[in-house]
Amino acid sequence: MAEREPTGNMERVPITRLKAELARYLTTLKAGRPFLVTDRGRPVAVFEPMAFDRFDDATKTLVMTGLVRPPERELPMDFYERPGPKDPEGRVLAYLLEERAYGR
Image (cartoon, rainbow, N blue to C red):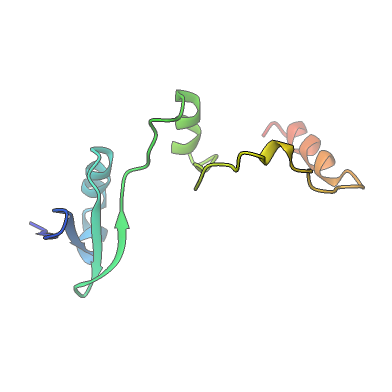
């Protein structure tokens, strides 16, 4: 059994155990329980479940399949009032149309 972190009761998981039992720890994350990954006893990462409660089902599906990433932070209040990027040659539109032609 993995050790328990005294502050916050977070499970400590050695990296070798994480590699060997990845499916088990993914289930732990899906159940909403974070854990601390250690390398030779030193903390190297905290794995925590993604906060999906603010997304609709379609967005959750896109995130879970890896097609989009969830936002790292909220957009500033004036985001949509800011000027867009300059693209005088229309390269962004051309690329978008090319992707659509390939069915992506």
